[in-house]
Image 1: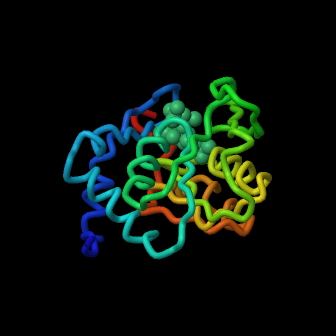
Image 2: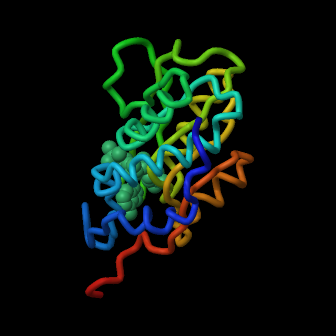
Length: 191
Ligand SMILES: O=P(O)(O)OC[C@H]1O[C@H](OP(=O)(O)OP(=O)(O)O)[C@H](O)[C@@H]1O
Ligand SMILES: Nc1ncnc2[nH]cnc12
């Protein structure tokens, strides 16, 4: 039985996220979650915090966003004892798909989901690592809703408060949960 994970550990978990200035392009402060994943202690804390939040929410399936949402989402689905649905970048899924295009902080993208991935009215938990502009998360929400399923919550480790992504998602009536909020997607280092 899971005991309540140490919520005080969230600050330390967030501090494990490595910041890389000007990557992949000038002006972006890239938030790299690989140090969290590499740490047995913090990867477990991350998954346990989310398991604890959703274990009594009657989640039918976890959907994860390509690519970092796969890592967190798959671990979460396993612990919640539900299936996992990958929402992939365009051109990767072999069966018939539904797709959504959206704008990113740096560029544009299209994501896709298999047309048979979700049952009508199913209760879906959507997972990614972070919300910047919110374009990716919102596109995932739209795909799930277009398949007639419900987004119980969209969840991520981190939300950038200097971008309107999180607010935009909530304004669309989507419940969004982020473990940590941080002002800092735009790099001021060396400017
Ligand atoms: O809120 P947004 O502005 O949409 O940005 C957030 C998205 O950007 C990153 O993924 P990316 O598209 O870089 O793909 P990756 O996971 O394959 O690196 C991140 O993992 C989120 O999915
Ligand atoms: N600043 C950032 N760091 C990591 N991933 C991102 N995706 C969009 N913006 C990002």
